[in-house]
Length: 301
Image (cartoon, rainbow, N blue to C red; front, side, top):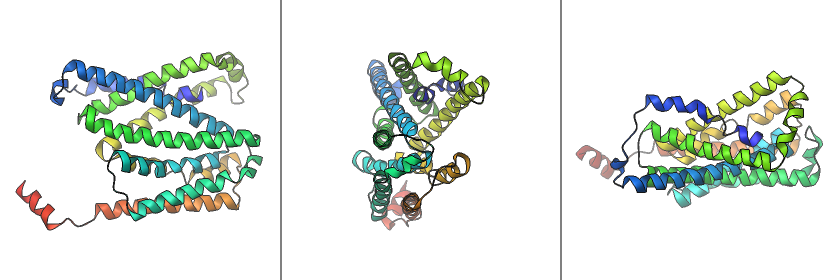
């Protein structure tokens, strides 16, 4: 159910398609049949990749405390820097490398500290390891997903319109939802949904409302991230989504009474340091003075 809810809210985006004109496939310079075939394969691939990634994130959140989970998720920025360098020709500077190292060390500190399972999750050491590996794998997969999206926008979609962003969110989410529903029934977990709803402490209405609003907020967030990929880059999109990660462990202490021992505090500080390293690199790139050759080219244009 946790996997399903991350993609099942896509119908709320369908009305938005009515407000944006459809761009012509002929404008890409490819035949209509080739374009449709390529897009269908693209949506299918990204949908299945998204479903697998959502499932790994769900298992990670199931077996890890919120603070540990959020800090491990911070590694997706480092993974994204690597994939952006390999797939999107992203510049790999010293500050970017510093961010990569710091976030990797931050996650490693949590990996060698299984004593954190003595908090609210109350899971065994093997399940803690599984949760850690699933979260780490999900972070790497999500980073690859973002980099491949940026590559697809440039090489295959080639449409500078908002409806292209909506298509890339709606259709893969539909595929991911179908895959999640198949998994829900194949695993037999659907049989426990009735008892789960009845046993929810806050009541049935609260259970349904949590699912509905979680699905809606996931879609809003995803469209925003896709828009940033479309307008800037996958790495910048991931940076924005990582802004909240250093704050989540603090909120987990306040609302879920999660523990924050010395190792987690150190991992948190390293994660913040790694994030700020990239932010400073982006600042330098943004305000870097143009060379005389570049200025002359702009004047001629």
